[in-house]
Length: 324
Image (cartoon, rainbow, N blue to C red):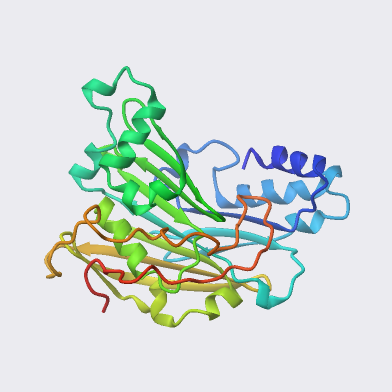
């Protein structure tokens, strides 16, 4: 949130009008150790609303007059959402959606891929980031050969990556320490179904606990059948890993046309799955058809609405396991 003022100032210098402000996060593992303004969601909301008094927002103060919401069980993993939508456009043009997959307790072999090896300790961390992209399986997942990929490794461990494919973006962050291992995968690629994408991401990271969220314009979500999102996915079978069972599901309609969905999944390794399938050996990457498939949702404080066209994966697209 501390970058909000800089973004406003840059937008003002470019003569841009602020139309959409969004901020969301999962509840913190260590909330008492967060610096201001992140000590609580209430403080974050107050910080955002304070920007409405900024003189650079003359006539646009409503852009920081949104509301805060909570999805999910307050006693477990939940999601804080703030949205202020001042966009003026026909509803049929608002078809954007962004999915975020947050994964906890990663498999040991997955965590190892994001540690610097002895031969890499003195190397350029950007070059090592490219190596991590390949050895982790992420290169196949984001179709690195057809995307602009900016990957960065950290010492002694950790990884961040941004990938662009036409108007679609993908962002990945990994914290591999055993006592707090975590990975997130976010993309605004508009798909006709998110089952294969979610299961391919789970195949790469093999987490024990998963939180999946979806921001979607109402018109964009109406394009999809219920079975295309995790609303219709009580179980996710991931070959070679196990079956993820949905623990809870929440949905919320905010502002005039924004839908927020959230689901928590827990891995049950005792349930049978299909035969193992290797992502690197032939599963089509979810961004293979990313050219022109999604409107570009800008980050954090500025959003320009574009028409997003949902497309299917190139056929045939083998699922990792089967959806029930």
